[in-house]
Image 1 (tube, rainbow, N blue to C red):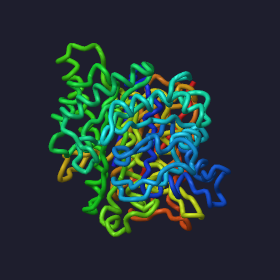
Image 2 (image 1 turned 45 degrees about the vertical axis):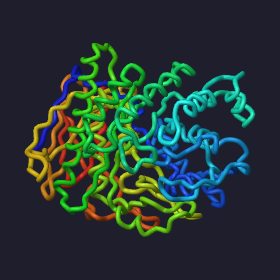
Image 3 (image 1 turned 180 degrees about the vertical axis):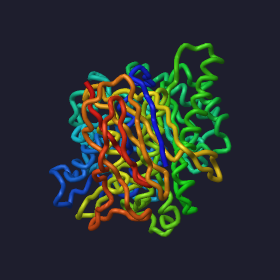
Image 4 (image 1 turned 30 degrees about the vertical axis):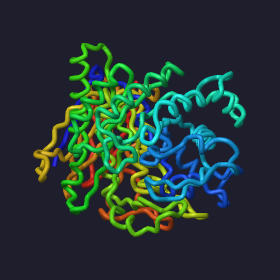
Amino acid sequence: MKAKILTNKGNLFSEIDNRIYGSFIEHMGRAVYGGIYEPNSHMSDSYGFREDVKELVRELNVPIIRYPGGNFLSGYNWEDGVGPIEKRPTRLDLAWQTIETNEVGLHEFFNWSTQVQSEVMMGVNLGTRGIDAARNLVEYCNFPAGSYYSNLRIQNGQVEPFGIKTWCLGNEMDGPWQIGAKTADEYGRLACETAKVMKLVDDSIELVVCGSSISTMPTFGSWEQTVLEHTYEHVDYLSLHMYYGNPENDIKSYLAKSLDMDRFIKGVVAICDSIKAKKRSSKQINLSFDEWNIWYHTLESDNTIEKWQKARPLLEDVYNFEDALVVGCLLITLLKNSNRVKMACLAQLVNVIAPIMTENNGESWQQTTYYPFQQVSAYGRGNVLITKIESDGYDTKDFLDVPYLESVVVDNIERKELVVFAVSRSIDEQMEFSADLIGYELTKVIEFSSLYGFDLKQANTSNQRDVRPKNGGTADLLEEKVITILQPLSWNMIRIGYK
């Protein structure tokens, strides 16, 4: 089997906004309690946050983290998470039917995010609350001093403003499962008025308005149109959420799920631009794909977990080799749409459908999906080049002519590297692969890393961590071309230096 990609030094598609490599921490399951925060662990710092987890997060190079939810957000009172910890109330979290102690709140999470070199994407509750609580939270976080809420922040130990730039206007407000779910008109009006007052407090902030929870919602399309009719002039991004899985155990269809993500993105872009044209606006709304991942392993087992306990261990999907390949395809798809997808959040970061897992008072480790994300986040910085793919394809029940090769090229200008990310969807044939990198004076292959050769269902655990990238073999330079062999069912990263 042969496959080829072609690009040209002048073929710039888009500059990458590094926030496309964001992630997500919600107060659910063991993401916070038992994940990033475990005061009784010998791994934890003096504030109760696990040092080993911080190190793994830093290695992922995550520039922004969405917080505090998720469905949790729609029933959350932000005031519960500030002030002396011993005076904070214990609440029922109705979204996930757990006990929330509020030991970790805004100050603690902000300080943790600073230690892992990440910004905070803060959510405001538009389920049970609204305009007043949102404006007060922005004042608390970002106003320097001299007002009630800024002085309260100072009293609580944070003299300088948090300076949070990016804010989400609620979460999945179209979903009937959501606390305080709304119609598109109800949400659009509320989001519009909330956005206006938040920007009156701080006109430097960026706002993300809720799109459809998933692309299969019956209101998809009409929801986006109605919400943007209300909010277009006052917001900066529209959110997308989507999760994928392989319940049918059909690897060919599973590897093609990234085509669904691509179709979803392009559809939402078209809706945004139709409202732009209708409003005769010069403003462009970009996208925040602020929930995406693989999620299906625990959908049934989660229903058996006892309710109303602290850190109820939900959504602890154990990811396998095939999951890592699909995550690689999804990452490539986000890069191929980076002209409009400016932010994205792998949901979530620790324990809850996450690349990082921990044991209570025990080990932490990288799941299989950790590695494609870590490599793209580390080296996929700079500019995406227009990449033409020449590859045979195959058909699935949902898509025709799925290319056996999925690939994109990034020009990492600071490193003076071209980085080729590629997934071979071929089940059992090696792929004779070539990349024509026209206009570049190539110097050497810096690294050829590949994730391949594992059983599709093989996973990493605390005791067995074999599923990780290894040397991909020999990659040869021939003037403006790279030639190599891609193994069947493989995730690949080839870094090439240039003058």
